[in-house]
Length: 348
Image (cartoon, rainbow, N blue to C red; front, side, top):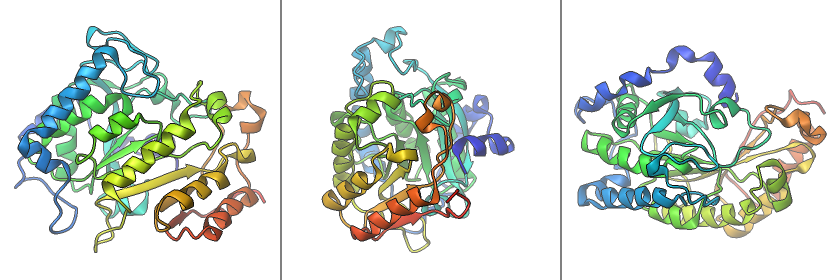
């Protein structure tokens, strides 16, 4: 199920963003922490020492000449200027906050992944399935305290994690909100659900804060990322560097005894028509640079959306053969922790 379909079909599960600040009074004893016994999130220690607040201020200062993402626009977001992503400065725009049951199984469990969909995006892929949120920024303007309240409410209702979708351009806001929420009893793992296109310097500032990294590795060929993701020519190189740093920080993702993921690196790769993403090369890189038991989700759900029909090569779904070739390649390379999806419904 795509994120867009999930949002369209589960509107009743979404919480009113405007009421989120009401939940700041939820203490640890009241919150339904649903992660398994003995778990302590990475950020708690840094919150207690004051380091989390310090890191948040470092990222906040970067927005004065914004270089939070590889576009390094240099605009002053504190003064209301907008860069390529069009995200605001002191506030943030959030599309929705709800338990998501369409994510990877180790993130979903029984209580769902506590997903917060952040608006705007620094990539703007022409085939984006969530373009209304990513490009148009459709959502509700929220404060840091609103944001923290959403995290606490997701914990209260029994979600297993806080899943931050498209976080890069809001990384400063995220750290501030985690610090506020941790003081009020937040104890869920943080999932950094990113396109993968990150500045290494920024990822290093997240060390000891993020519990689960969930990056895409969309493209192997810089010509493809340049063409289909608004000039993001550096995508393959910068994503590879970022993923190596993510692995250094959190290691291989292995679920707890209850089957729920609490820490580690989980990579996503969307198989695209005509091998546009260079799927086999991506698998080769993963096998050659990371442990063979690295969690890799080989995604089947590509569907033409947004401007994809302007590109004939993007205007169709993938075939069974295209998907199975990638899966077989990954297996041949010795990758042992593959999330392989059903593809019987694809055209042969």
